Length: 48
Figure 1 (cartoon, rainbow, N blue to C red):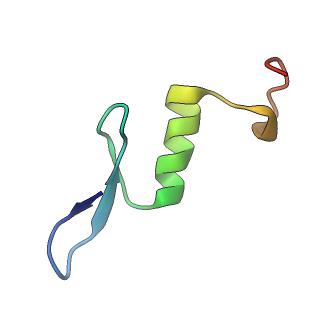
Figure 2 (cartoon, rainbow, N blue to C red):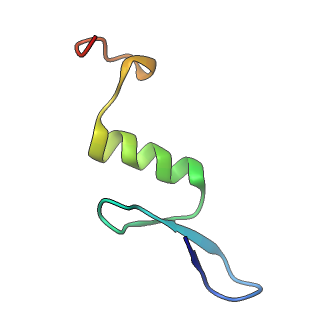
């Protein structure tokens, strides 16, 4: 996580590609889609 001062936004950094996201939800969605792929909870049953 990166902070940019008292009144500025805090961004979350992807541990895989260092992309920055404004919310933990956006980061989680990015990781699932770009690095891990959809799992059982997202509708992909091919792995199970």
